[in-house]
Image 1: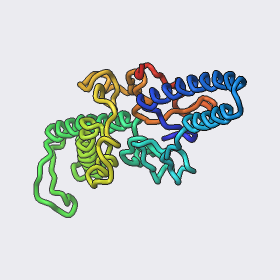
Image 2: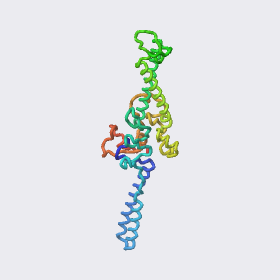
Image 3: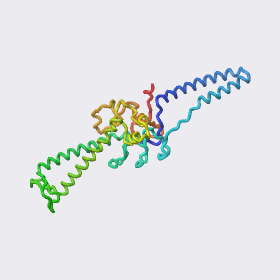
Image 4: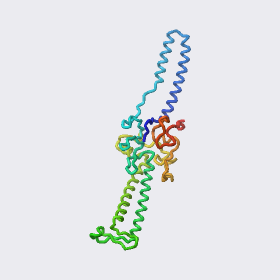
Length: 285
């Protein structure tokens, strides 16, 4: 979630413009000082001319106002370009995909990897459970027969020790739950591949598809690594499958989130390393 007190990131061009503006102000101030010394030896007309120049210079030094996007539902807090307000958590989430009731949280930029691994591990467990059930089905000799009042599924089996009645609640519930979670995890996994390949979450893809936003506005900010898994390349790596935080190149995390956080507001919850408090300017050198 975007923390209260977040501020927009300045682009490299903006940082260079600010640096040039500071140099211009310093040069102008020196020129004004020199002119004020000369004005002491000039008549009243020259003094009036100097005051006019100072007024012009003060107008040049005035900074233009910038319209900063804010979220009214978050008490006017800054809203990064790729953030969307989540009605369930009541916060703006960067790269919001959806709200997941299974993890009781919104899925966004920094926890999307954990959600993907959650459904991947669930899918693997379901496949393993399905294989074990099929092997037990073969071992116990379960087979379809004629349905009766006592055996309404018509399943029959060989009376081997350890094999339960195929029409029992345990057998039926095990088969049903395994089939259901296998189906759900498979569909969920297929829905995550567009996020991995394009870098756009579900909400962003919908807005682009509906023409409410453009790819350059809410699309991926870097192409040299995967925004979901981190790393240093877009190619598959072992750390994609490990339950560890995504590691991004230096300065990339701030670009993905699209905001900076001042240290005097305190530590960001869940960000023990304070990686958002100090913004590096190395990439703009």
